[in-house]
Length: 619
Image (cartoon, rainbow, N blue to C red):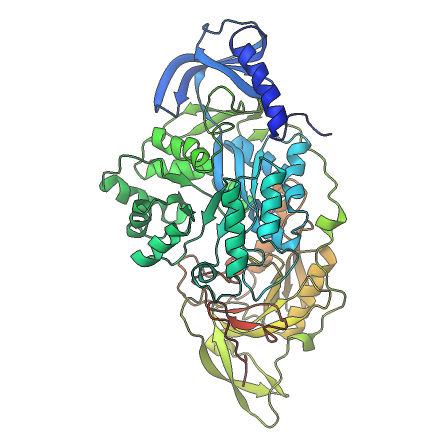
């Protein structure tokens, strides 16, 4: 059922606010009044004792001391022991990385205080660009209390050397910005070489999207990974890229703040950065927000959502009040959404997080759209039952069974060894390195004694199931006849597979085709675990707890595998089950040599995405 007033629309917005005006004046009755022991105003960073929030429909009509409202109220609620703060906002998040569809994401994060999200939508966009906006707004249309503000993806495709289920340029972005007020801007601009270099084949496409966003007064989000020298930081800001969530060091953070960038902190470097900023005497924290970016449902169950980031900030020395601002009004201001979210103020959605303890950010209850929707971690709302259509659930388009031969790398006749290009996960070095690998039965072989295995990208869009393959080091299984495959391969989301045998790799990929995406683990020739991501090959339409149970089974089976490991440039590349390989397929800066699905431009799939240079994988 479509809910009236769920989506923000200019005509409805006028009608809603006309009603709120008369309700605030007491000339029309309010629906509810929520009286709280303490009320936090994010604008002045002040606490107010014994205040009430007066609600009409889904919005706040009046805030003030208890008893100050001049009108009638139909229903009253009193929480004298609790402190009210605004609903937390995600300034930058890939809901796809929770691996839950939006309605089930809402049920997971709302009890943890997250009432609105700016969806960085280049993941599903690359799977099905034409239906992107429809997908992100459907759950809200059906009554989900989570406000999702989509930002169409700049990385669709991520580079000029990739192509999948979506293509966004000037025309598409102009249409998105005009179609809905829920669209807040342009998702993270990741292809930095295409921004600065007029010769790059994606230059015109990216600047066209930026132009369309500027024309609609939207926000252009940035992705400044690896950009730490002052010239690059200045150029990044000069391009109009308004933010960066990729800061890794305190000094980089300071330099980017000083060039006017809004910094979105993730948990990985948060403690060190916050302690540094406090030590520097930073007085104005308005240019800082928190982001979970990519966090799975399993990790959200374990850690939390935006609330976890805010708690970590507090533990790192930030005052609870500033931490709350970083999770509420700061991201709302940055994304130009303050008329709707970010504060407990008239006209905004009645999204209230009720804390039993402010210092530890202990959440007792959450209200969203003027209704209590959680008690502790228990979601009380109704999850819309959405039967997602074929355009969302039939996206792994491989119309054949793959065989071991698809993953073989033939040797030249008469050779006992061949030279091979080798890369490793998170390979930020400007050049790949080479190794001499053995030849057996006419094929170039892996060398597990050197931690070398085979990695492949399988095209899942054309129907042909074309395979790019090469040798990677420091990842994958050492256990014989074992392979892992996944349809989450940021950001193009073809299928990747890594394995100790070609037959095992084929078996794992075929298993993914059968379930339309997710995870598949083959161990010693047997399929021992699958996890189903049937929506876009990225998400599943079911509760977080059910998905987590399936993931825990996968983890348990994976613990029986001997996984190769070598340290690399990325600090978040860990020993054991190589889940982070989902991100090792990135093609944005500072990546250089990468493996992508085969195409006319890149027949073997091995390309330097910063220069366009290609190379053989064995010779």
